[in-house]
Image 1 (tube, rainbow, N blue to C red):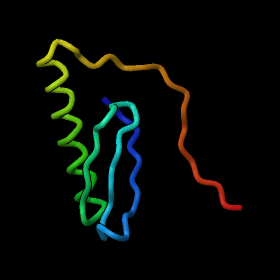
Image 2: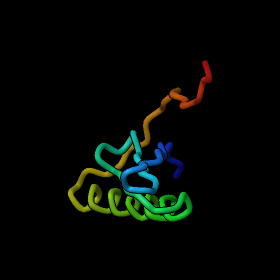
Image 3: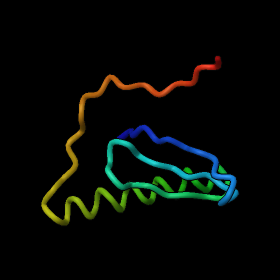
Image 4: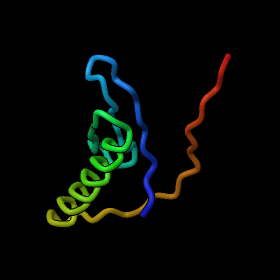
Length: 72
């Protein structure tokens, strides 16, 4: 499964915060981008496991949302 993840550098934490918009409340962090990627993968797996355990399995949503960057 593929999920869109938003990575934001947090200067106070001095690392990256990762959020999965499609999975409400699913977030993680890491001091490096690679660490944040591995941690969010674990968070997603855990999130899906808990949802399934509580008889609320994940159902993929069709979405045409794209996240980009614009310089003005």
